[in-house]
Length: 334
Image (tube, rainbow, N blue to C red; front, side, top):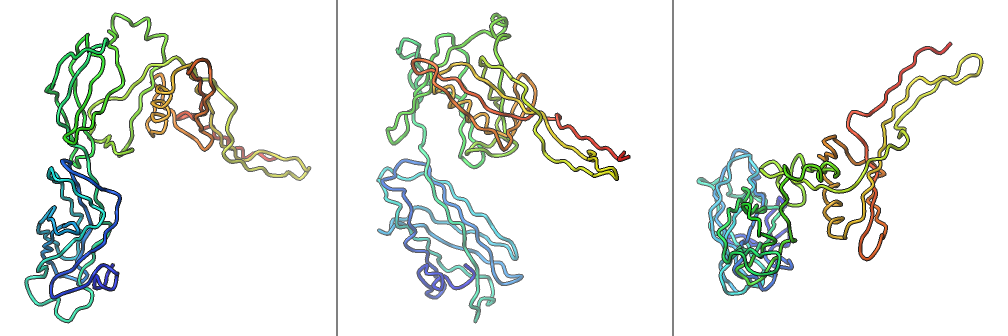
């Protein structure tokens, strides 16, 4: 980084051509998938802009992507290219990023050793959806090749599939262009208004995040994650965060400053491992509402499970509550 690419062990320099060779990764036998390539690039000569022309090829010379990136002066550019791999399988474990005739408009590169740098080169692939089939509770097909509304975020990393209400719907299967089949968990629709007594006995847990979490961009997500479970919140002891004492002339200790917050334990009734997996994931988020009150994890938060019976488990986790910090100041030391 920051030198001729040959000094970084990335191949070398021939006239205006630069190479990044032997780029190792574990993406093999890839075809019919969405492929994303990204890297950061910047001119290392102050005030000089240039056009970076490149092609991404396999070790066999197959061109996967070819584009020109305009790099402004004194600005690091994040380049991203999303394209679909052809039907022919590729092994992407020996890629080459080859620059072709990349240079500024003038002669600013003449005699210079440090021209531009490329860093944080990344590549990953993602299955492309081919077909959605919906199923009834008894396993029979409800609708084949269903035309669902699919929303994808700007980076192409998160897809939201919207399925309208159908009382017979139980699950869906997604088939990708590569032939892989993804099956959703079974679901059952319940009319909230007609079953409010049932829901009133359950505890709603709602979660979100202030930014991206595990590949999900919550800033652009227009759905709400919520689950209703049997659980209860138990108040535990105050969790001491800080304190300060002073000794009087008579040898007594007086409290000057004390900070603590209330600690709670969420105890969850017996559920299957699948439900507990959802709850563990939910409780990792930084926006967490239980019974419409905001909680957050602390340093002692650990999701602990115990076997109940025949594949069912109970669980507990310690949490802290928003706006439950106790601060005591005492300046009277007589």
